[in-house]
Structures are given as structure tokens and as C-alpha cells.
Length: 317
Image (tube, rainbow, N blue to C red; front, side, top):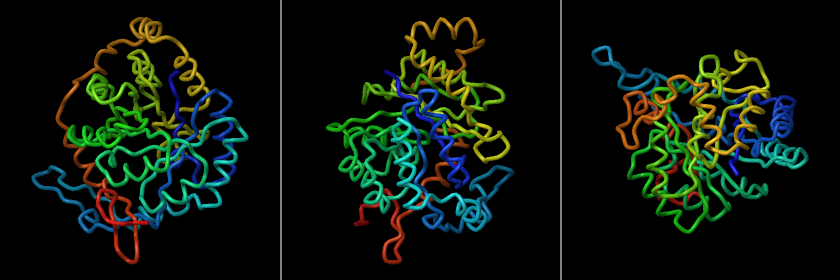
């Protein structure tokens, strides 16, 4: 059975009433997981090169993302320990599995106490081997996105998890992602390491609806992750790439069909669907490399005044 992850991201805006509504709406339409992100503003790292960015010969070399505005944006959306426990308990009441993306190793001990069986690893941490090793000791199942990740990092992560249950998710770290750069054929590369392969969809709702996810389902994925909101598109940063409850219901209904049936639908109803296929192996684009440079290390553990990144083989807890 295909698993459908409703990714809440920061669409809850840090408000419990919104988060609670998201949980129950996702459960009502049949999603398997309600997912929040474990990021905390106080775990954001200051890195000088992103304060002003760098442009050489009209080409961006380093993106501009100053620390203070980003901290101020994220702080109101922090999910405290108490609110996280409340989220997990509410998911159980609604009959949907709770899930979270873990952004720092120092959060693992707390999150492991909440009773979640599975966790998500963000694209930029597919190559963070200490994080992955620690997560496999605490959780039964890992969903790992592979956007902006080099092939050798994917292979090494698979080796670490060869005695553990996990799924790799094809993902392109361009927000929103145009259909012609989805490279869904890359899932064939991921299947060399695990039979459990899925797709994390960041396409633009106003332009593409849920077509990208439907095509991925036709290709026989194990899991679909899709941003989800109960707010208006303009009310949150991730609104433009987030589906509403009716669209999530439609996605769940497609996920319950056989891949060959979905492919018949695709061929009849989604013109030029083949542009989503792309290459099984490819170089990362300039935009993906820029995002990798910023997002990998965006958050870090802070232990006794020392910043420890997820890929560093240092003791955190």
C-alpha cells in the first residue's frame, strides 16, 4: 500500500488551532501520516557568507539569506516540547500516524520519547551519516529525501541502513519545482538500494495541481509526500506548493488505485507527462547546488557553546 504523507511544514504558523485542524482534516481524507518539522529558531546557525550573498558576473554564487530576518520569521512557529507532545496525542486521537523531520541530532533524545515509529530525514541530511546512525537506533523506519544529494552520499546512506527499514524519496530542491526538471526516472537509480522508493512533491499547485504526484503514483512509488494546508495560499510561505483538503482527498484516492490504472489516466489526461521523466543519473543544477550550500548546515546542535553539524562525527548526547 502506498503511504501518503501530509507535510504540514510551517503552514500551522505556530498556532495550535490551525495545527489541530490540519491533523483532523488530513486524517478525515485518509492520509497515513501527519508530519511537522522539528526545527527550532534557536538551532538556526549564523554563517557570515549568507548575510550579503555573492554575485559574480551577474551570476549568484552564494544566496542572500540574512540570519536575523530568518530567525524572526521562524521563532513564532516553534513547536515547544509541550506542543509536540500535544501534536502526537492529537494524531493518535484522530487515527493518523504522527511524523516529523528531525533537523538536529540534539533533538533526537526528546523526539524518541514521543512514541513515533517513523521519522523523516530532509534532503540535505541524506549525507549526514552520524544523524542517520543515531536515528536508526531510535526509530523503526526512516523516510529519507535525496534532493541536492550526490550519488555517493545516497549509496553510503543505504549501506548504513542495510539492516534497517527505510524508503528513499526522489526530490528536487527547487521551490516550486517545474515539471520538466522532476527527473522521476531517478527513482530507478534509488531502487538499486531499496525496493521502497517514493516522491516528495514541491510542484506549483496553481499551475500543476497534483499532476506530479499522480504521475509518480503511476510509476509505482512506495510513498508520496505533499505539502498540505488548511489556510489560503497567500497565508503561509509554503502555501503555493501546498494542497488543500480536497486535493489531498483526491491524492489519497489515486494512491489506492493500481499503478497501471493510474498510468491510463495519466496518458489520457496529463498532456506532455513524459517531460517529468528526465534522467536516472544527472548532475545537480546550479540552483540545487546553491540551495544545498545554504540549507545543509542551516540548523545545528549547540552543545556547551559548540556548534555541531549533523555530518560531524562528534558526541552530541
